[in-house]
Picture 1: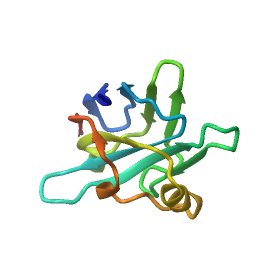
Picture 2 (picture 1 turned 30 degrees about the vertical axis):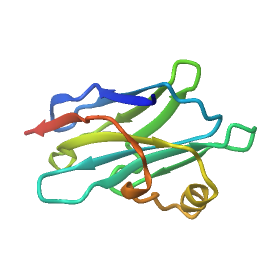
Picture 3 (picture 1 turned 135 degrees about the horizontal axis):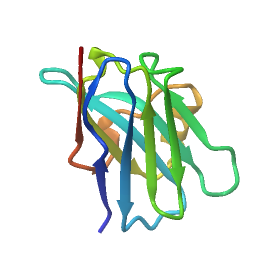
Length: 137
C-alpha cells in the first residue's frame, strides 16, 4: 500500500526558511509525479511545486507556482523515497497546510508539466495528511 507522509512544517518568522519533506513508501512504479499543494481555510488547494520523473532517462520536469518562483526548490532522493521542498524568504501568505500528492507520471500529467501547469489536485490518488506552515511577523 502506497503511503506518503509530510513533515518539516512549523512556525517561522517572516523572512525565514523551511524544508518540507515528503516520505513515500510502498510506491512500485518507475515513474512519478509529486506535487506539493497548499491550502488555507476556505480556499482550494493550489499547486506550489511539482516534479515529474519518467524513470527512463528523460529530463526531469520541475515547475513552480509564480508565488514561490525564485525562492523555492523541489528535489528528490529516489533511493530513499524522499521529496523535498525548500522555501526561503517566507512571508505571511505562505501560511498554509502543505500536502504532497503522488502518482505516476502519466502522459496527461507530463503534458501539464511540459506547459508549466500543475495537474489538478483531483488527478492525484495518493495524499499525505499534510504539514502546517505558519509564518508570523
